[in-house]
Length: 479
Image (cartoon, rainbow, N blue to C red):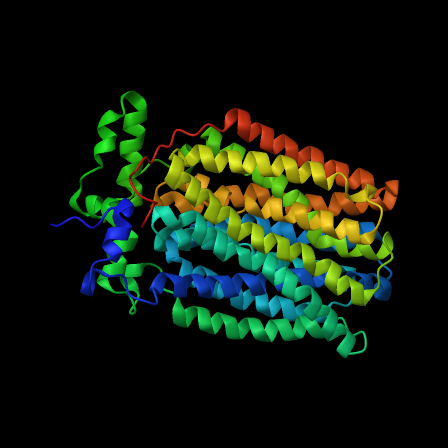
């Protein structure tokens, strides 16, 4: 069998004519576009509750603590369903896992309009959280399957850039709908629910679980995606670099590489907890927990903070709430592209991606502690934009660090464990923030809590997260 071109020879390959040239447009980018659209809607749906919060609190007379429970209960189901979603993507494929999840969360988005009191909001939000839980791990699984290693950071970054963009677009759209309906906060939830059903139909039409199963896939692009490591897997050969690894680590890498060979059963691999127990995996999860804490405080309480503490009105909230999300969208894309470029130039993929998380998360946390001290609403929005940019710059890296350690048949489930740990911040952050503001009457204390948690996670990753790079060059975990 002839060997497909090495990623390092991609420029030479591009100069070839005929069937060796990758088709344009490339199918993997259509799959990425479908994922981008679904994730954008996901975060627009999620951001709606933060924008509608002042109206809901006023209508029902909720305290900050009570509404904190409504916001936080989302994560009680969101966190475990991140794990379940990763398992479902491994077991049934990402197409079904995401498609049915999108239909479910769209239904519960619309159902939010039927909220009639504290208990009903709790029930609706916990069902909504369960439906949205799979999206991050399913996305990571899908990108890990569809993109070559050299493009993985970029692919995950672009896909997840839809989440802040969804917040940026969703915030002013929710405001516009509420204003157009004379203060009816229920209207945007109904509209978003209907749009979600249409997006799910589009998802099923465009996406397939693997490139091999897609009717649009051409042989040239399939060779480009799978690369030499995919061909080595098909022939049962491991890359020559494996010859230089010795001792127990060599055995571990051979075991992991086996998971990337065509036709290898998952039962031939170590169990999920073999990978979760690695320091780089659980410290990545704790760093992701810190990331999620700051992000969830921003997502759920920042609109209320801007209204109650900074005195902005609804029209200005549309802008103030959207601008930081734009920074996040740029940061997510820039982070994926930049780290892929650094890995190509410097090698040491695990080190590059790990230190990107550590440095940017510490900077974001330090700046977040200053939100309550800036002098104006404009300065608060500007500072929050920088913070969200830095947070999202790390966004793709949590998943690519896992990809360096875990073979394809185990990737979704291990990523789900990481998502579950981070998802716990989605429950604790809104709840504790609301309680602190309600009882201590201090936004500064609430923000400082987030700073300490995020920096602690980053430092743990810096000190204990040195990866074994167990998968070596065995591929990006294709299954």
